[in-house]
Amino acid sequence: MGCPVCGPKLSLCGIITSAWGIVMLILMGVFFIIKSPAFIEDVNFDHDKVHKAGTVEAANNLIEEAYQTSAYNCFIAGGIYVVILIFSVVQFKWNMRASYVMS
Image (cartoon, rainbow, N blue to C red; front, top):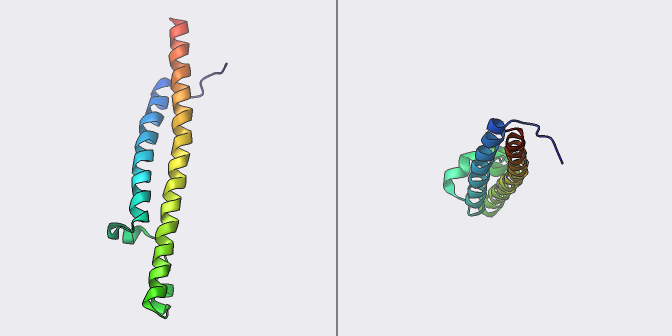
């Protein structure tokens, strides 16, 4: 079927790390969608563009667009962590099967 690429400890570490990454990034994405003020310093937008915007609505639109982009980035990174979680689980299962066959 297949050969494990990483050992049991590394695959378990990958499972734990990716599970935490999924939870954290999905929560951060939700907080970016609801435009949490706690994340305003983490939002990447051009401050000069916001200050040069003619109206308050234009400045708000730029900031809301930056929040939306940050939320999408968090969800994409969470999806990458899902792939890593699946890979780590498969590796862990192969390692457990290999150690069972050897003993």
